[in-house]
Length: 341
Image (cartoon, rainbow, N blue to C red):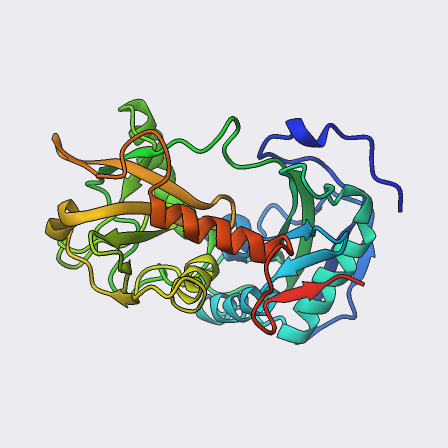
C-alpha cells in the first residue's frame, strides 16, 4: 500500500486523523461483532456515564515498521490483559483479549498507509479505549459501552535528541491507598493534570509521586514508571500496589537480565536512598526511557552521576536493546512481536 504524503521526519507527538477506526458496542449484556469505520465523531447523550462519572479506561501501544519492512506491534497481549483488569475494576464489561488483539490488527491493517517507514523515527500510536455512553444520573455503572481504537502517526517523543529531565518530589498524591492507581483509567490521569501544570510553571519537567500511605517511598510520575541503576550496575524499579504495571518496565527488566546479564529486581524504594543511585529513567510507551538528571526534593537537589547531558551508560544499553527488539534489529523473545499480515 502506498504511504500517505506525510513529512514523517518532522512529526510531533500529537493527533493526526487517520482514515479508519474500530468500534464495538456493548448493549443488552453483550458485545456486538464490531467494525472498522471511517467516522471519527462520537455522538452520545449529554448525560452519558463517561461525562458524569468518568467511567473510562484506555491503553496505548505502537505499530512499527521493522528493518526488513514488516509492520509489527509490541506485546499487545499485555495491553489486552491490562485493559481487562482496568475494566473489571471500574465495573465495566471486559472486552475479551482475543477480540482486543484482532481489533488492533484490523485497525492497523486498515491504516497501513499511515504507518511510518523504518528509519523515520516515527511510529503509529494505537489508542484502544472504552467508556460508558448511556444516560446515567444516579451514581452507578453505565449499562451500555463503546470499545474503540484510534490510531495516529507520531514522531519521536523527544525532538532533537534525548535530554535528561529535572523532576521534583510532589506534594500531591497521584493515587489513593487501595484506590485505582494500578489500572489505566482516565480519572488517574485527570488527578495528575494540576500537578504537572504546576510543575511546569515551577520549571520542572515532571513530578515524582511518593506512596500515598507514608510518603516515604518512590512510586511513579503522572504517566511513567521509574527505573533506577545502582552504582554497581544493578537495575531496580519500585514495587507498589498503587502504580501502573508498565509493559515497558517489565520488558526492560527482562532485557536487563536476559540480554545484558545485569541484576534486576522490583522492590520498595525509599526516597532517602535515591541520592545513592547512579542513573534514573522514566519508562513508558511514548519514549521507552526518558533519562532523569536531577531530582529536587523541596529545594534539596539530588544530582545523578549520569549528569544532565545524555543518558547514563546502563540506561542507554537498555534503551538501545529494547528499541532494537521493537524495530527488528535484534531477535525478540518468543511472543513479544505481533506481525500485522
